[in-house]
Amino acid sequence: MSQSRTQRLLLLAAALVVVVAAFVVLRPGSDDRSASTTAPAATAPAAGATTTTDAATPNAKPKAPSIPTVRVVDGKPAGGVKKIAVQKGERIRLRVVSDVADEIHVHGYDLKKDVAAGGTASFSFPASIDGRFEVELEHAGQQIASLEVNP
View 1: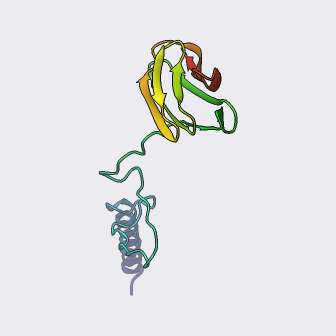
View 2: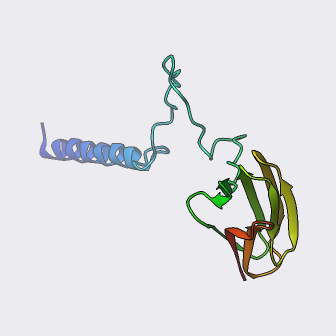
């Protein structure tokens, strides 16, 4: 074999290696950062298992905000005066579960609701006035919550 023919074959082999390497590097879908294009198979939960729904799941309902609840036992707030803080413009929600009959009064907003012994009174109103306000059992004169509306 002549030297020129050997050089041509080596040159051709080198060119072929370069073309193959360029194809592997530049071909679509060769990005190492991408994950497999096939989705993992879904599996059914085991019998008796509980499942949760991710908030990013389509059609998932957002959790309802928790409603602060004051429990009145023997005419006093169980666990002490409940502190409730909201931003002005938000909705204030409050539930009072009482073992005594009285009138619940939200000072500053001048909202009043009767609660029966063993009953519940619920409030839901816009936080339109900033400041600190007492929530009390009106007739007993017992503060049961402190409402703070921040500007």
